[in-house]
Length: 120
Image (cartoon, rainbow, N blue to C red; front, side):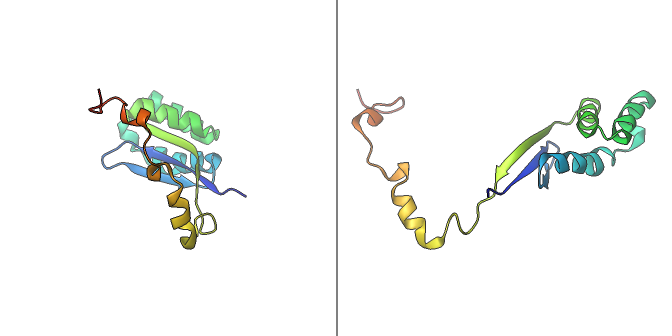
């Protein structure tokens, strides 16, 4: 079985990263730990009502999108990132795996004539 996570990068300075089991959990995390922590004084009453309504109706993605638009901060959401395990990359097999990686192939003549080379 493949193991993975969903994550989001909030483009603040410094960036914030949120990690969850899947995108559904990630949406709830962003709603609770990002959107709901906003100072209400930072929003006009109509916008505050819009975000509150989305949160109370459990429309997590709508709340995050509205928050991004109103606050002006971008959030990059990635729905799946594979988590590698010891079983997939055992230390005693790394040498064998590396020797067959593209970096360890001998360059072909066509490779030497690629853009940026000095070949004529």
